[in-house]
Image 1: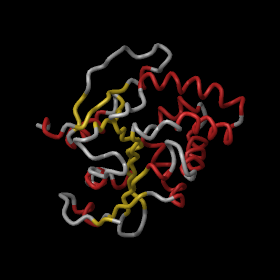
Image 2: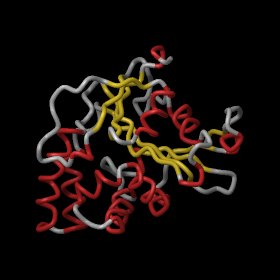
Image 3: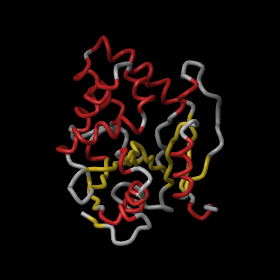
Image 4: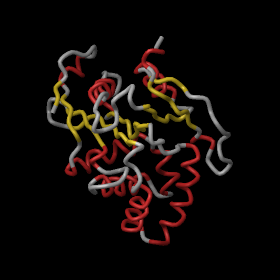
Length: 224
């Protein structure tokens, strides 16, 4: 566990950081959902409550892109998780697709899983998996009352450089995705050192317009 010593925001100075645990599932699931609620609702096609229930189930598993093993958390002075992020190392995601199929089948059954997988393929045209040389930062969320206090910036600064998570820039290309309409989050990522990458192809006609996203790459030297 790491403790913050100096950060600009007073609230951030009381944070500690640690790898997530399986026991964090119930508190982290709503945060993970908040990180991409529109994407999850499109992908799963169920209510927000059912999305969160699924994410809590998947977070508690030992493998897969939603697993606690992929996540880092920020904890406040009361011991409560207040922020989360995940890192998906492109060298270690080979089993992710079969694992998500297995997880969906276990939780939703065959009839619901098939259309979910089809929507997932559409979503992946907008949010592609990281290449082998990349690490995708995802599930970035802060508890509502802690937003604007430097909490996520502190968590990201803590995670940056973690070789085991593939966040050892510049050896790794660190990328993330943000909705075009989520201008507040995009502004935060730019302050952290991310820059917009040009679009390579138009948005799929089968993807709702509100899910159009920007892929960003961590290039701190280009900060202005």
